[in-house]
Image (cartoon, rainbow, N blue to C red; front, side):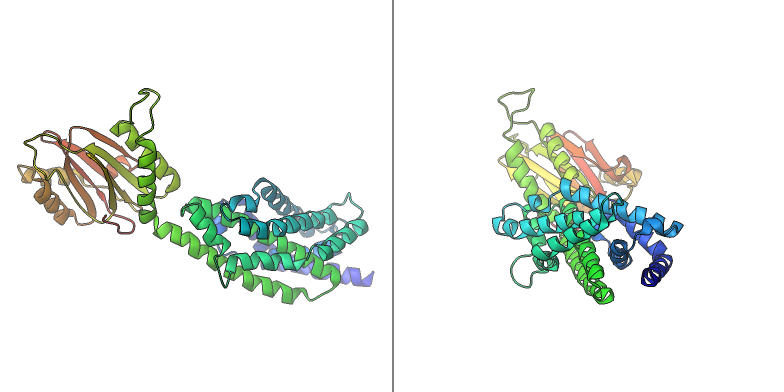
Length: 406
């Protein structure tokens, strides 16, 4: 009885010292995938209570702090369990049967052990029986080895990490990678909670185990951040590949209004913008699709662009110009109009260079066409697109993002 009382006092002291931190950790788990995947949260205080919870019948302690923390702890545990059931990690790892086979038993073992751990916390269950079932299952399924296997799949001293496999599989989709990393972090948390519960029940040194997995989770977080950052910084190159793929897909797709005909310029611009906006939702895009002038009297020079944030695609006489900014700023449209008027007559190359030299931090695109399809998600004050003279268009918006110029 004295030992239990002493353990209770130590646990209540732990709660008092870490109460705010524990609640902050729990709050982090309630936030979206982007925050959970990219934030280095010290989970040690959270894992610190995993062991004592299986050793003490806290429902009998009568301390408000303990009861409150237990409810919060169980709530997060339940959330982790639901998330693991709805979003099986291995279902995300596609095109890699070897990695699937490697991760499948790991995920299953960690998830099942975690549920047996939760059974111990349920006051309606006979604690002794639940503890015995948990301990037996832990020993027969490899216990902490599952967590090491998951860790090795992420860190990977040789060969591709599961993060790199997933990044390539989703073609550097930032949001898909954040979702995947959030699932991984959930699974790691479940595994560490299981290990800490087992360590506590065995009477082993919890402090050493906590420190060990704290350092490992820091390495995992750095690996996650590196892969997610790669998705963010390399978006222009990946978006160019995507547009090429979407163009080939949609340019030969019959619309419901025009069965048997290719999508018109505006329809094509709309669907490409929709795809870009969905995958790269932190970037502003302008998609301009137009047919090259075909008149005998038309000069070969029908477009010119200055700036760094753009790429283009061309098929026969159809031109696709995509420009973007991940940090757009409002334009002085009156100034742009004044610069154009100063030119008196728009000359494609000279006027483009003139406007660009005056504004410098903008993308400037001047082109001639009779058939323009344009779609953008810039705010109205961030993009200028007007027709000047007959069939001559001037497009301006602020730069932003990595340089492509292709």
